[in-house]
Length: 509
Image (cartoon, rainbow, N blue to C red; front, side, top):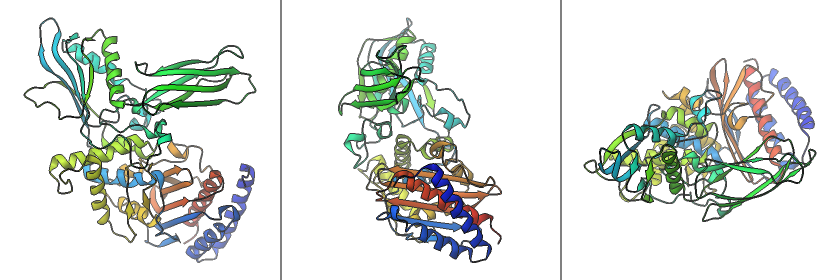
Protein backbone atom coordinates (compact mmCIF):
# COMPACT_ATOMS: atom_id res chain seq x y z
CA UNK A 1 0.00 0.00 0.00
CA UNK A 2 2.92 2.33 0.48
CA UNK A 3 3.14 4.94 -2.27
CA UNK A 4 6.08 7.07 -3.29
CA UNK A 5 6.26 10.72 -2.39
CA UNK A 6 6.05 11.62 -6.09
CA UNK A 7 2.75 9.76 -6.43
CA UNK A 8 1.39 11.40 -3.29
CA UNK A 9 2.44 14.83 -4.52
CA UNK A 10 0.71 14.28 -7.88
CA UNK A 11 -2.43 13.01 -6.18
CA UNK A 12 -2.44 15.96 -3.78
CA UNK A 13 -2.06 18.46 -6.64
CA UNK A 14 -5.00 16.98 -8.53
CA UNK A 15 -7.07 16.64 -5.35
CA UNK A 16 -6.56 20.26 -4.32
CA UNK A 17 -7.09 21.58 -7.83
CA UNK A 18 -10.51 19.93 -7.86
CA UNK A 19 -11.31 21.28 -4.40
CA UNK A 20 -10.30 24.80 -5.34
CA UNK A 21 -12.50 24.67 -8.44
CA UNK A 22 -15.43 23.41 -6.40
CA UNK A 23 -15.10 26.19 -3.85
CA UNK A 24 -15.30 28.91 -6.46
CA UNK A 25 -18.92 28.03 -7.13
CA UNK A 26 -20.12 28.65 -3.55
CA UNK A 27 -21.21 26.27 -0.81
CA UNK A 28 -17.68 26.10 0.57
CA UNK A 29 -18.60 24.34 3.81
CA UNK A 30 -20.57 21.66 2.01
CA UNK A 31 -17.78 21.10 -0.50
CA UNK A 32 -15.15 20.71 2.22
CA UNK A 33 -17.33 18.24 4.11
CA UNK A 34 -18.15 16.11 1.07
CA UNK A 35 -14.57 16.15 -0.22
CA UNK A 36 -13.13 14.86 3.05
CA UNK A 37 -15.86 12.25 3.46
CA UNK A 38 -15.11 10.94 -0.03
CA UNK A 39 -11.38 10.97 0.57
CA UNK A 40 -11.68 8.97 3.82
CA UNK A 41 -13.42 6.18 1.92
CA UNK A 42 -10.19 5.24 0.16
CA UNK A 43 -9.40 1.54 0.37
CA UNK A 44 -6.13 1.93 2.27
CA UNK A 45 -7.98 3.72 5.11
CA UNK A 46 -10.50 0.89 5.49
CA UNK A 47 -11.08 -0.04 9.13
CA UNK A 48 -9.50 3.13 10.53
CA UNK A 49 -11.33 5.36 13.02
CA UNK A 50 -11.49 9.15 12.65
CA UNK A 51 -12.69 12.13 14.63
CA UNK A 52 -12.31 15.43 12.77
CA UNK A 53 -13.52 18.97 13.33
CA UNK A 54 -12.64 22.41 11.99
CA UNK A 55 -14.19 25.71 13.04
CA UNK A 56 -13.97 29.10 11.34
CA UNK A 57 -12.88 31.39 14.19
CA UNK A 58 -14.18 34.54 12.51
CA UNK A 59 -17.81 33.52 12.29
CA UNK A 60 -17.96 30.45 14.49
CA UNK A 61 -19.06 28.25 11.59
CA UNK A 62 -18.31 24.54 11.64
CA UNK A 63 -16.37 23.98 8.44
CA UNK A 64 -15.77 20.24 8.85
CA UNK A 65 -17.34 17.60 11.07
CA UNK A 66 -16.48 13.92 10.72
CA UNK A 67 -17.69 12.03 13.80
CA UNK A 68 -16.32 14.88 15.91
CA UNK A 69 -17.71 13.48 19.20
CA UNK A 70 -16.05 10.07 18.81
CA UNK A 71 -13.55 9.59 21.64
CA UNK A 72 -10.21 8.22 20.48
CA UNK A 73 -6.67 8.08 21.77
CA UNK A 74 -4.99 11.41 20.93
CA UNK A 75 -1.45 10.34 21.95
CA UNK A 76 0.46 13.57 22.64
CA UNK A 77 -2.58 15.63 21.68
CA UNK A 78 -3.57 15.38 25.36
CA UNK A 79 -0.67 17.76 26.08
CA UNK A 80 -2.90 20.58 24.83
CA UNK A 81 -5.05 20.15 27.93
CA UNK A 82 -2.08 19.83 30.30
CA UNK A 83 -0.24 22.87 28.94
CA UNK A 84 -3.26 25.14 28.45
CA UNK A 85 -4.61 24.45 31.93
CA UNK A 86 -1.20 24.97 33.55
CA UNK A 87 -0.72 28.21 31.65
CA UNK A 88 -4.14 29.46 32.78
CA UNK A 89 -3.71 28.26 36.37
CA UNK A 90 -0.11 29.28 37.07
CA UNK A 91 0.40 32.10 34.59
CA UNK A 92 3.13 32.52 31.94
CA UNK A 93 5.59 34.10 34.40
CA UNK A 94 5.52 31.21 36.88
CA UNK A 95 8.94 29.77 37.73
CA UNK A 96 10.01 26.63 39.57
CA UNK A 97 12.57 27.07 42.34
CA UNK A 98 15.12 24.49 43.47
CA UNK A 99 16.74 25.31 46.84
CA UNK A 100 20.31 24.13 47.46
CA UNK A 101 21.76 24.28 50.97
CA UNK A 102 23.03 22.21 53.87
CA UNK A 103 22.41 20.96 57.36
CA UNK A 104 25.13 20.99 60.02
CA UNK A 105 27.93 23.54 60.28
CA UNK A 106 30.60 25.02 58.04
CA UNK A 107 33.99 25.69 59.64
CA UNK A 108 36.64 28.20 58.66
CA UNK A 109 38.66 25.63 56.71
CA UNK A 110 35.81 25.16 54.22
CA UNK A 111 34.71 21.81 55.62
CA UNK A 112 30.97 21.19 55.85
CA UNK A 113 30.19 18.99 58.85
CA UNK A 114 26.80 17.91 57.62
CA UNK A 115 24.86 17.11 54.47
CA UNK A 116 24.67 19.01 51.20
CA UNK A 117 21.00 19.11 50.23
CA UNK A 118 18.98 19.66 47.05
CA UNK A 119 15.20 20.02 47.39
CA UNK A 120 13.57 18.86 44.17
CA UNK A 121 10.55 20.91 43.11
CA UNK A 122 10.27 19.64 39.55
CA UNK A 123 12.35 22.01 37.42
CA UNK A 124 12.61 20.12 34.08
CA UNK A 125 15.15 22.56 32.65
CA UNK A 126 18.15 21.45 34.74
CA UNK A 127 20.79 20.56 32.16
CA UNK A 128 18.09 20.07 29.54
CA UNK A 129 18.96 19.42 25.93
CA UNK A 130 16.08 21.66 24.85
CA UNK A 131 17.71 25.02 25.53
CA UNK A 132 17.11 26.12 21.93
CA UNK A 133 13.38 25.56 22.28
CA UNK A 134 13.17 27.21 25.70
CA UNK A 135 15.12 30.31 24.67
CA UNK A 136 13.70 30.44 21.12
CA UNK A 137 17.26 31.04 19.89
CA UNK A 138 18.88 28.85 17.26
CA UNK A 139 22.22 27.55 18.44
CA UNK A 140 21.49 28.07 22.14
CA UNK A 141 24.19 26.07 23.94
CA UNK A 142 23.60 22.98 26.02
CA UNK A 143 24.57 23.96 29.57
CA UNK A 144 25.54 21.70 32.44
CA UNK A 145 23.72 23.29 35.35
CA UNK A 146 25.65 21.25 37.90
CA UNK A 147 28.97 22.79 36.90
CA UNK A 148 27.55 26.24 37.70
CA UNK A 149 26.19 24.91 41.00
CA UNK A 150 29.63 23.61 41.94
CA UNK A 151 31.15 27.03 41.24
CA UNK A 152 28.54 28.70 43.45
CA UNK A 153 29.00 26.17 46.26
CA UNK A 154 32.77 26.75 46.15
CA UNK A 155 32.17 30.52 46.18
CA UNK A 156 30.29 30.03 49.48
CA UNK A 157 33.48 28.60 50.95
CA UNK A 158 32.62 24.89 50.84
CA UNK A 159 35.55 22.74 49.70
CA UNK A 160 34.97 19.50 51.59
CA UNK A 161 31.77 17.77 52.69
CA UNK A 162 32.00 15.51 55.74
CA UNK A 163 28.53 14.13 55.19
CA UNK A 164 26.09 12.94 52.55
CA UNK A 165 24.73 14.37 49.33
CA UNK A 166 20.96 14.26 49.78
CA UNK A 167 18.22 14.90 47.23
CA UNK A 168 14.62 15.27 48.40
CA UNK A 169 12.43 13.82 45.69
CA UNK A 170 9.14 12.94 47.37
CA UNK A 171 7.19 16.01 46.29
CA UNK A 172 5.11 14.36 43.56
CA UNK A 173 4.21 11.08 45.24
CA UNK A 174 2.96 8.24 43.07
CA UNK A 175 5.16 6.20 40.74
CA UNK A 176 7.89 7.39 38.34
CA UNK A 177 5.89 6.18 35.33
CA UNK A 178 2.40 6.78 34.01
CA UNK A 179 -0.35 4.14 34.13
CA UNK A 180 -0.43 1.68 31.26
CA UNK A 181 2.95 2.72 29.94
CA UNK A 182 4.27 -0.30 28.08
CA UNK A 183 7.11 -1.98 29.96
CA UNK A 184 9.21 -2.58 26.85
CA UNK A 185 9.24 1.17 26.11
CA UNK A 186 10.64 2.29 29.48
CA UNK A 187 14.17 2.31 28.04
CA UNK A 188 13.33 4.95 25.44
CA UNK A 189 13.85 8.69 25.99
CA UNK A 190 10.12 9.38 25.63
CA UNK A 191 9.33 7.17 28.66
CA UNK A 192 11.85 8.75 31.04
CA UNK A 193 11.16 8.50 34.77
CA UNK A 194 9.06 11.26 36.31
CA UNK A 195 10.76 12.85 39.31
CA UNK A 196 11.08 16.30 40.91
CA UNK A 197 14.86 15.76 40.71
CA UNK A 198 15.04 15.70 36.92
CA UNK A 199 18.31 16.36 35.12
CA UNK A 200 19.54 15.86 31.55
CA UNK A 201 15.87 15.03 30.75
CA UNK A 202 16.50 11.83 32.76
CA UNK A 203 18.35 10.40 29.77
CA UNK A 204 21.91 9.57 28.82
CA UNK A 205 23.12 10.26 25.30
CA UNK A 206 25.37 7.69 23.62
CA UNK A 207 27.50 8.93 20.73
CA UNK A 208 28.77 6.27 18.32
CA UNK A 209 31.64 7.15 15.98
CA UNK A 210 32.78 4.79 13.20
CA UNK A 211 36.41 3.64 13.18
CA UNK A 212 38.88 4.61 10.46
CA UNK A 213 38.73 1.22 8.74
CA UNK A 214 36.07 -1.37 7.89
CA UNK A 215 35.64 -4.19 10.39
CA UNK A 216 36.89 -2.30 13.42
CA UNK A 217 34.56 -1.59 16.35
CA UNK A 218 33.02 1.87 16.53
CA UNK A 219 33.92 4.05 19.51
CA UNK A 220 31.34 4.95 22.13
CA UNK A 221 31.10 7.95 24.45
CA UNK A 222 28.48 9.09 26.97
CA UNK A 223 27.01 12.46 27.88
CA UNK A 224 26.98 13.11 30.74
CA UNK A 225 29.84 10.88 31.83
CA UNK A 226 28.74 9.66 35.24
CA UNK A 227 29.21 6.53 37.29
CA UNK A 228 26.60 3.81 37.16
CA UNK A 229 26.01 3.72 33.39
CA UNK A 230 27.62 0.67 31.77
CA UNK A 231 27.59 0.35 27.99
CA UNK A 232 28.62 -2.80 26.13
CA UNK A 233 29.32 -1.87 22.53
CA UNK A 234 29.01 -4.34 19.67
CA UNK A 235 28.89 -1.93 16.74
CA UNK A 236 31.05 -2.66 13.72
CA UNK A 237 32.32 -0.14 11.17
CA UNK A 238 30.92 -1.20 7.79
CA UNK A 239 31.52 -0.20 4.17
CA UNK A 240 30.54 3.19 2.84
CA UNK A 241 27.60 1.71 0.93
CA UNK A 242 26.12 -0.01 4.00
CA UNK A 243 23.06 1.27 5.79
CA UNK A 244 23.34 2.31 9.42
CA UNK A 245 21.72 -0.25 11.71
CA UNK A 246 21.83 0.64 15.41
CA UNK A 247 20.03 -1.19 18.22
CA UNK A 248 20.10 -1.04 22.00
CA UNK A 249 18.62 -2.62 25.07
CA UNK A 250 18.62 -1.68 28.75
CA UNK A 251 17.78 -3.67 31.84
CA UNK A 252 14.39 -2.91 33.34
CA UNK A 253 16.07 -2.44 36.72
CA UNK A 254 19.54 -1.14 36.16
CA UNK A 255 21.65 0.92 33.81
CA UNK A 256 23.51 -1.81 31.94
CA UNK A 257 23.07 -0.95 28.27
CA UNK A 258 23.99 -3.04 25.24
CA UNK A 259 24.28 -1.47 21.79
CA UNK A 260 24.83 -3.44 18.60
CA UNK A 261 24.70 -3.12 14.84
CA UNK A 262 26.77 -1.37 12.16
CA UNK A 263 27.70 2.13 11.08
CA UNK A 264 29.16 3.07 7.66
CA UNK A 265 32.74 4.29 7.60
CA UNK A 266 33.19 8.07 7.26
CA UNK A 267 29.60 8.67 8.37
CA UNK A 268 28.75 11.33 10.93
CA UNK A 269 28.62 10.14 14.55
CA UNK A 270 25.25 8.69 15.48
CA UNK A 271 23.45 9.41 18.73
CA UNK A 272 21.13 7.30 20.86
CA UNK A 273 19.19 8.74 23.79
CA UNK A 274 18.26 6.24 26.48
CA UNK A 275 16.12 6.74 29.57
CA UNK A 276 18.00 5.97 32.78
CA UNK A 277 16.85 3.78 35.63
CA UNK A 278 16.64 5.45 39.08
CA UNK A 279 16.73 9.03 37.82
CA UNK A 280 17.10 10.41 41.37
CA UNK A 281 20.41 8.63 41.83
CA UNK A 282 21.46 9.70 38.32
CA UNK A 283 20.85 13.33 39.37
CA UNK A 284 23.02 12.93 42.46
CA UNK A 285 25.79 11.09 40.60
CA UNK A 286 26.00 13.89 38.03
CA UNK A 287 26.10 16.54 40.75
CA UNK A 288 28.76 14.61 42.67
CA UNK A 289 30.94 14.47 39.55
CA UNK A 290 30.53 18.21 38.95
CA UNK A 291 31.57 18.89 42.55
CA UNK A 292 34.58 16.58 42.24
CA UNK A 293 35.63 18.33 39.03
CA UNK A 294 35.78 21.57 41.04
CA UNK A 295 37.78 19.91 43.83
CA UNK A 296 34.88 19.49 46.28
CA UNK A 297 34.96 16.04 47.90
CA UNK A 298 32.11 14.17 49.60
CA UNK A 299 32.96 11.58 52.26
CA UNK A 300 29.43 10.29 52.75
CA UNK A 301 26.92 8.54 50.51
CA UNK A 302 24.35 9.65 47.95
CA UNK A 303 20.79 9.52 49.27
CA UNK A 304 17.50 10.21 47.53
CA UNK A 305 14.77 10.73 50.12
CA UNK A 306 11.00 10.70 49.71
CA UNK A 307 10.56 12.26 53.16
CA UNK A 308 9.70 15.90 53.76
CA UNK A 309 12.69 18.26 53.41
CA UNK A 310 14.23 19.72 56.59
CA UNK A 311 12.56 22.78 58.09
CA UNK A 312 14.11 26.22 57.65
CA UNK A 313 15.45 26.21 61.21
CA UNK A 314 17.68 23.23 60.33
CA UNK A 315 18.37 24.11 56.70
CA UNK A 316 20.93 26.72 55.66
CA UNK A 317 20.07 27.78 52.13
CA UNK A 318 23.01 28.66 49.91
CA UNK A 319 21.16 29.64 46.74
CA UNK A 320 18.13 28.80 44.61
CA UNK A 321 18.07 27.59 41.03
CA UNK A 322 15.28 29.38 39.17
CA UNK A 323 13.71 27.85 36.08
CA UNK A 324 12.78 29.77 32.95
CA UNK A 325 9.24 31.12 32.86
CA UNK A 326 6.40 28.69 32.29
CA UNK A 327 5.56 30.44 29.03
CA UNK A 328 8.98 29.34 27.77
CA UNK A 329 8.92 25.87 29.30
CA UNK A 330 5.69 24.81 27.58
CA UNK A 331 7.36 25.12 24.18
CA UNK A 332 9.27 21.94 25.03
CA UNK A 333 5.95 20.28 25.93
CA UNK A 334 4.11 21.27 22.75
CA UNK A 335 6.70 22.06 20.07
CA UNK A 336 9.02 19.13 20.86
CA UNK A 337 6.33 16.96 22.50
CA UNK A 338 8.56 15.97 25.43
CA UNK A 339 6.67 13.58 27.70
CA UNK A 340 8.82 14.09 30.79
CA UNK A 341 8.36 17.86 30.72
CA UNK A 342 4.60 17.43 30.29
CA UNK A 343 4.33 14.95 33.17
CA UNK A 344 6.36 17.23 35.43
CA UNK A 345 4.26 20.24 34.45
CA UNK A 346 0.93 18.73 35.50
CA UNK A 347 2.47 17.61 38.81
CA UNK A 348 4.01 21.01 39.48
CA UNK A 349 0.54 22.49 38.96
CA UNK A 350 -0.95 19.94 41.37
CA UNK A 351 1.68 20.65 44.00
CA UNK A 352 1.18 24.40 43.67
CA UNK A 353 -2.58 24.02 44.15
CA UNK A 354 -1.90 21.85 47.20
CA UNK A 355 0.34 24.51 48.71
CA UNK A 356 -2.37 27.13 48.11
CA UNK A 357 -4.95 25.02 49.89
CA UNK A 358 -7.12 24.93 46.77
CA UNK A 359 -10.30 22.82 47.15
CA UNK A 360 -9.28 20.73 44.14
CA UNK A 361 -6.43 19.31 46.26
CA UNK A 362 -8.05 16.56 48.28
CA UNK A 363 -6.31 14.99 51.24
CA UNK A 364 -4.26 11.95 50.30
CA UNK A 365 -4.09 12.71 46.57
CA UNK A 366 -0.70 12.78 44.86
CA UNK A 367 0.43 15.71 42.73
CA UNK A 368 -0.67 14.16 39.43
CA UNK A 369 -4.18 13.42 40.69
CA UNK A 370 -4.56 17.00 41.91
CA UNK A 371 -3.26 18.33 38.61
CA UNK A 372 -5.69 16.13 36.68
CA UNK A 373 -8.56 17.27 38.91
CA UNK A 374 -7.66 20.84 38.02
CA UNK A 375 -7.67 20.01 34.30
CA UNK A 376 -11.13 18.46 34.66
CA UNK A 377 -12.44 21.44 36.59
CA UNK A 378 -10.97 23.91 34.11
CA UNK A 379 -12.22 22.03 31.04
CA UNK A 380 -15.75 21.73 32.45
CA UNK A 381 -16.07 25.53 32.40
CA UNK A 382 -15.15 25.90 28.74
CA UNK A 383 -17.93 26.83 26.35
CA UNK A 384 -18.74 24.20 23.76
CA UNK A 385 -20.27 20.78 23.34
CA UNK A 386 -18.19 17.61 23.65
CA UNK A 387 -18.52 14.22 25.33
CA UNK A 388 -15.68 14.96 27.77
CA UNK A 389 -12.34 13.19 28.09
CA UNK A 390 -10.41 10.57 30.04
CA UNK A 391 -6.93 11.54 31.23
CA UNK A 392 -4.64 8.80 32.53
CA UNK A 393 -1.40 10.78 32.30
CA UNK A 394 -0.27 14.28 31.37
CA UNK A 395 1.75 13.41 28.28
CA UNK A 396 -0.38 11.08 26.17
CA UNK A 397 1.89 8.04 26.37
CA UNK A 398 -0.85 6.05 28.10
CA UNK A 399 -3.40 4.42 25.82
CA UNK A 400 -6.07 5.05 28.46
CA UNK A 401 -6.34 8.69 27.38
CA UNK A 402 -9.45 9.43 25.35
CA UNK A 403 -10.78 12.63 23.81
CA UNK A 404 -12.72 13.68 20.72
CA UNK A 405 -11.95 16.27 18.08
CA UNK A 406 -14.77 18.39 19.50
CA UNK A 407 -13.14 18.19 22.93
CA UNK A 408 -9.84 19.51 21.60
CA UNK A 409 -11.65 22.21 19.60
CA UNK A 410 -13.17 23.48 22.87
CA UNK A 411 -9.67 24.02 24.24
CA UNK A 412 -8.36 25.64 21.05
CA UNK A 413 -11.32 28.03 20.73
CA UNK A 414 -11.04 29.07 24.37
CA UNK A 415 -7.29 29.64 24.18
CA UNK A 416 -7.82 31.84 21.12
CA UNK A 417 -9.72 34.23 23.42
CA UNK A 418 -7.47 33.85 26.43
CA UNK A 419 -5.01 36.52 27.65
CA UNK A 420 -2.41 33.76 27.21
CA UNK A 421 -3.38 33.35 23.55
CA UNK A 422 -0.07 34.16 21.87
CA UNK A 423 2.04 32.37 24.49
CA UNK A 424 -0.02 29.24 23.88
CA UNK A 425 -0.07 29.46 20.08
CA UNK A 426 3.66 30.17 19.92
CA UNK A 427 4.32 27.04 21.98
CA UNK A 428 3.04 24.87 19.12
CA UNK A 429 5.04 23.31 16.31
CA UNK A 430 5.15 24.85 12.83
CA UNK A 431 6.23 23.33 9.50
CA UNK A 432 9.99 22.90 9.67
CA UNK A 433 10.12 23.29 13.46
CA UNK A 434 9.65 20.76 16.27
CA UNK A 435 7.46 17.77 15.53
CA UNK A 436 6.37 19.30 12.20
CA UNK A 437 9.92 19.31 10.88
CA UNK A 438 9.76 17.95 7.33
CA UNK A 439 5.97 18.14 7.07
CA UNK A 440 3.52 20.39 5.20
CA UNK A 441 5.91 21.67 2.52
CA UNK A 442 3.07 22.75 0.20
CA UNK A 443 1.04 25.08 2.41
CA UNK A 444 0.27 28.42 0.74
CA UNK A 445 3.03 30.81 1.75
CA UNK A 446 0.61 33.23 3.40
CA UNK A 447 -1.14 30.52 5.49
CA UNK A 448 0.62 29.35 8.65
CA UNK A 449 -0.04 26.19 10.63
CA UNK A 450 0.59 26.05 14.40
CA UNK A 451 -0.25 22.61 15.72
CA UNK A 452 0.33 19.87 18.30
CA UNK A 453 1.00 16.43 16.92
CA UNK A 454 0.42 13.04 18.51
CA UNK A 455 1.99 9.73 17.51
CA UNK A 456 1.87 6.19 18.84
CA UNK A 457 1.52 2.83 17.14
CA UNK A 458 -1.79 2.97 15.20
CA UNK A 459 -2.48 6.45 16.60
CA UNK A 460 -2.00 9.84 14.93
CA UNK A 461 -3.42 13.24 15.77
CA UNK A 462 -2.92 16.85 14.78
CA UNK A 463 -4.69 19.80 16.38
CA UNK A 464 -4.08 23.52 16.20
CA UNK A 465 -4.66 26.67 14.19
CA UNK A 466 -4.47 27.95 10.64
CA UNK A 467 -3.31 31.56 10.63
CA UNK A 468 -3.91 34.02 7.80
CA UNK A 469 -2.73 37.65 7.83
CA UNK A 470 -1.18 37.08 11.28
CA UNK A 471 -4.56 36.17 12.78
CA UNK A 472 -5.81 32.71 13.86
CA UNK A 473 -8.62 32.03 11.44
CA UNK A 474 -9.40 28.36 11.98
CA UNK A 475 -9.17 25.82 14.81
CA UNK A 476 -8.86 22.21 13.69
CA UNK A 477 -8.44 18.77 15.18
CA UNK A 478 -7.83 15.47 13.38
CA UNK A 479 -7.51 12.17 15.26
CA UNK A 480 -6.97 8.77 13.64
CA UNK A 481 -6.79 5.38 15.37
CA UNK A 482 -6.78 1.70 14.45
CA UNK A 483 -5.36 2.07 10.94
CA UNK A 484 -3.60 -0.83 9.24
CA UNK A 485 -1.96 1.14 6.44
CA UNK A 486 1.47 2.76 6.60
CA UNK A 487 1.75 5.72 8.97
CA UNK A 488 2.92 7.80 6.01
CA UNK A 489 -0.52 7.28 4.45
CA UNK A 490 -2.19 8.77 7.51
CA UNK A 491 0.25 11.69 7.49
CA UNK A 492 -0.53 12.31 3.83
CA UNK A 493 -4.27 12.15 4.49
CA UNK A 494 -3.94 14.74 7.25
CA UNK A 495 -1.84 16.97 5.01
CA UNK A 496 -4.46 16.76 2.27
CA UNK A 497 -7.18 17.79 4.73
CA UNK A 498 -5.10 20.70 6.04
CA UNK A 499 -4.41 21.84 2.48
CA UNK A 500 -8.13 21.77 1.76
CA UNK A 501 -8.85 23.86 4.86
CA UNK A 502 -6.15 26.33 3.85
CA UNK A 503 -7.82 26.69 0.44
CA UNK A 504 -11.10 27.33 2.24
CA UNK A 505 -9.52 30.28 4.04
CA UNK A 506 -8.08 31.74 0.84
CA UNK A 507 -11.09 31.24 -1.42
CA UNK A 508 -13.50 34.15 -2.09
CA UNK A 509 -16.12 34.83 0.56
